[in-house]
Image (cartoon, rainbow, N blue to C red; front, top):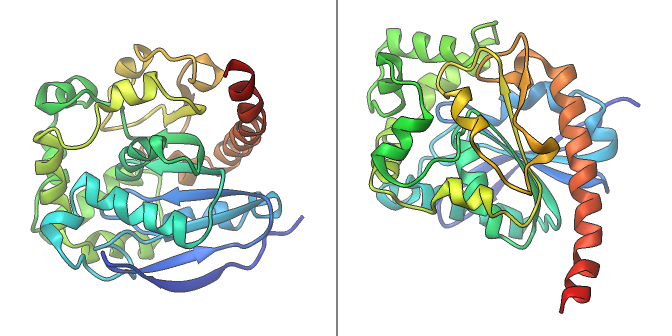
Length: 288
């Protein structure tokens, strides 16, 4: 079946005016959350796929990114809690019940914070290792390199823009995604990393290991930021297929580099999460 034509609109929240793409439809909704310095347009290959014939795809530009406005209160809205609150507003405003969240990089960390949201039926993350609180937890999960400093740098030179874009899309992308890096509010990077270093938010490793809904971890074999070996040490009954999934021929953005493989995994995970959500109330009633 052909892909649906997407609808683009602006949602006003107390955090920012958010630009959102929505494929519509009655299928299980999938909320796609982009990473730092990116935009909802990074998910073009999902919106152009057969996923839209079975699911309702929704992708917002986060505050300070893409076509959304900068945050109304940067010191609050650019923290992990602030971004999570913004996305929770999107879920509520659009009536996304039993939604499956795919979070990439920053979007993945937001997704982990959303695991306690009763509207979330499942979470897939990529480029976003579930870390324990504080600097030591982050060091264990991320690969140390000079390039990692770009994640917290407020002001980008032209060279920084090019380098960050190449790290995210080493196999090529398009001018829209390169321009998104330049457009992004640099305060979002610096404030967010300070927030994470302070230990704001949940213990994300524990949140994943104790999750009550299915969680999938999907990364590219060439992931430049995350220690893939670290992910192998995460054990949870909720972990989809019992182990992290790795896509060959892909880097930080497997949904862009290998969309056919990625879309198949996302579709299968969404079906499994929806089936789990249908069984969950029965299980709860039996255990009561």
